[in-house]
Length: 258
Image (cartoon, helix red, strand yellow):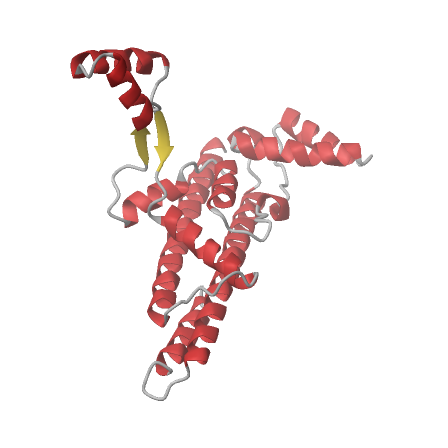
């Protein structure tokens, strides 16, 4: 977490160049590089945090019956890969441990893998494996002025509505009746809103990608860089709290079983 202070340092250096006689080129270089660095530190944080979580679970020696089913499923996939590579011992050990209710040692590197890209989908995939679903939705609702993460959208577009109205000679009552009949068969769909941390991560990675690949010239002000760092730091705190709570829950379950 202290590494995020480096980003603030870059933002402060850039801010000094906004004073009279400052170097505009230096401002852009510092803030743009700071944003790329922020993404890198965020990815590394997520990876190391989740790796430590799995390592802690391994040390607890939790019985298979208490392990989230998704973690067991991921472990089976890993074992299956080894079987295909003629490394059967790991899979045999897994089966034996499940039968005898003995602890399983999970591959912390594999379960914490971000593929160097901390997208919304990547973070949610990892936390779903840990049986912490909708983690970004919950944190977004807690930390932002957001009450709902989904909108209900009719699958009948404006063009079709106009066509229906014309077909019923602009009789709005009949038009609504027709639309209701259609929607009873063609139900409105839930669409996830890209708000809160979803929007922050999306926009951060979009800018990172454009800067890193030299596409366009996105400007990043020192204030924007500081705010992005503050938001990512707060998100990291939230993710830590979720994993800490999950670890405490599983620790309690393990002690209760014995």
